[in-house]
Every structure is written in structure tokens, then in C-alpha cells.
Length: 537
Image (cartoon, rainbow, N blue to C red; front, top):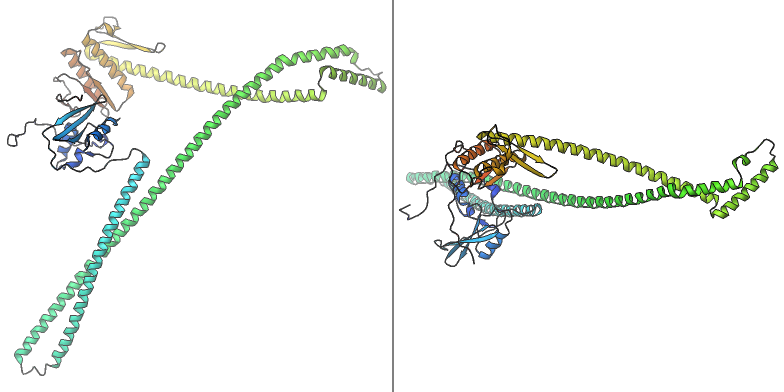
């Protein structure tokens, strides 16, 4: 570091490799980790853990960087680095306010052009991105295929030309051989010249054999190129089938979404229709009850009095001495009486019978609906009572579990206590005793360290039934003395070790003293130095 004149701290840590893809910010901006090349995965994970290079964006424009940070609702982006005249700026967000730190030592030497990467925000955009990437791969494969085909055609043409040339040379050699054979008799007197021709013949034969071997090699290369062409064609066909499958899946998903929306609308309309029918039935029931119990009895009593005024029950009784003429006369008299009654009442007998039948039918219908409503009410009441019983039993078990963990945590310091749950007033009270012989009392009367220890025990107790994957506690030990702080850390390490699949984060501005359990492989301590900030006006 002295040789390179670097003034910085030396990081000493255990070699560790982990997967940080879940915490990478979404979006299509270049990240610092994208422009770095690592030969050692451990160095990459170290920089991710200490410098957050996976969540630090590289953006050319300052205004764009600020907009991206303000739009980050998940707080996945740790900072954004943008260029300014004479250097660069590091922009971060804290409590929804932007803070800038100048990077004066950085000079804009060959600023990298940004490219767009990242995932889409919704399934439809993700499918479109996959289609686009698949199309890109298809175009690249098609280009490679055309290039290979072009190269293959060139090599095949060259091989054909070479074969044609070899054939022509073979024909020339054949003609030369025939001429040599014809002149063998003439060359018998020239032994030296014959030997020379024989040597030429051997050389030409060797050349022919060499050309034959070259032709075989060219054929093997042509077969290899044909195999590569077939493989490229198969990949191109597979990519096309994959695109079609993705398009079909997308169409099916869109159809299912539209169908579900239609069903939801129909269900809502049906609910509104049933509610209107229930209101109408209740009004009909009330009207019928009013007619049966209020309006109908006076009418019946009036008709009975009028009938008795015309003829008593004893007078209406028939005797064996009554003749047909007498009965007819009585019937005629009764008919006249009934006609008089109809004129007095203003309703005919047939109309009165129809009204009574209709009223009885309406009453029966409303009564059946009322009985169905009563059955439904009883069923809902029993279901509600069962759910209430389950809720009560669940709450009782949770109270027992919370009190058990709370008492177990207090026993680390020799304390006793319990948590009183008052559901009627929607509150709970922590009662603790520092000695077994003393009565339980409210923790508000304890000292700062004892109160903080009891509150931490309470937090660990309610964390037990929550079963959260990530938990955090900030500045839990600022009001504790060293004894209570050491015991609280010991308690926290014991309880956290019981849930190895849950990540628990504790933040404290104080130094961490030596406590049993801090050297466990699952415990990681990160010390952060105060940053130099420049607040914008």
C-alpha cells in the first residue's frame, strides 16, 4: 500500500462465498458488480458484503440517478454513482432524503457506456423479455448458421475446384504415361533418359497419392461442417418451438385472467341480486304477518257477527221433516243473505276465496323462506361459534407459549415474572420480580437496565410465535449497564441459536464485549465507520 501510495484500511475476514442474487435491485441500470471481473469468488462476496457493489448503480445523469433512488420503494439500492464535471458523485437515500458524497479523486477516464439489464416488474413484461431474448438468440443462431453455410459453400467450391484440377492433372498424367509407354522402345537406347522418366513417374505417383489424401481430408471436413449445420438447424427449430410454447402459455394465462374477471363480476351481481331478494322477502313477511295477525281477525269477527245476525247456529240446523221446497227456500234465503253481505262488504265470494288462497300461498312461500333463513342463520352462528372457540384455544396456547419463553428468559438472571393479557381492554402488562420471595410488580418501577432486560425478554417471547424469517432490533442496549448488557447479549445469543433458519439483525452504537457465543460461525459482526456526508442545500 505504501508502494502504490494508497491510504485505506486493510480488511481481514473469513473467506466466505454466498448467493446475493435475492438482494440485487430490480431495473435495467448498470451495477458496479457488472463492470468488474473477479477471478476469486471470495473477493467478489467480500466486496458485496462490505461495499455493496451489487446494489450500487452506475448512472451517467445525476437527475436520472436521483429519480431512480426516489422511486426505489423496496430500499434495495444502496447508492448511485453519477458523473459531474471534474469528478463524480455518490448519491444515497436515508429517511426518504437524498445525500451526496463527492468522489473528488475519481476522474472520468474512459467512462463506460451503460447498457440495459435486469428483470421486468410483472409477469407479462417478463414473458415479453423472454420472447425478446429468445428472438435475439434465434437471430444470432440464424446468423451463425448463414455464416457457417457460406463458409461451407466456399470450402465445398474450393474442394470441387481442387478436385477438378486434380482430375485434369490426372488426365494429363494419364496421357503422359501413354506417351511414355509408346516411347519406351525408342528410349531403350537412352538408359539415363529412361531412368529420369521413371523418377518423374514415381514423383507424379506420390503427388497423386498426396492429392488423394487431401481429398479424403476435405471430405471429412465437409462431413463435420454438415453435422454442425444440422445441429444449428435443430437448435433453430427447438428455439422456434419454445417461442410458440411461450406464446401459447401467454395466451392461456390471458384467457384465464379474463375468465376469472368475468366470474368475479357475475358473483358480485349474484350477491347484489340475493341481497335485494332477501330485503323483498323480509318486507313480504312483515306485510303477511300484519295481514294475518292484524287485518284478518277483525274481518272474520265482522263476518261471523253478520252471519249470526241473520241466522244462529241452532236455527240453521236441518231436521228430518225439512222438505225439498223448504230447503230450496232456505237456500234461496241464504243466497239472498249472502248477496246482501257481498253488497255490504264490497267483495264477491269467489274473489274472497281467491284472495284467501293467494294470501295462504304467499304466506307458505314466505314461511319456507323464513325457515331457510333461520337454518342459514343457525348454521352461520354455529360456524362463528366454532371459529370463536378455535380463536380462543389458539390465543390460550399462544399466551402459554409466550409466558413460557418469557419466564425462561428471565431465569437467566434469576428473575421470575409473567405477562398479563387483558383482551377486554386490549392491553398487556409485564410483571416481574427480581427475587423469588418478592411479589410480582410492574416493570415500569424497575431501573433502566432491569427494565431493558425485561423488555428484551418480552420481545424474544413474542418473536417465538411470530416465526418471522427476518427480525431486527435497534439500539437495544443504550440504557443498560455492563452487567445487564452482557446478560442481555447472552440471552439473545441463546434464543437466536434456537431458530437457525431465521436471520436476526441487532444494531447498537456501543462496542461489543466478549460474550460466549460471539465466535459461533453463524454470528457475523459488521462494524461501520461514520460516513462523511455533504447535505444538499
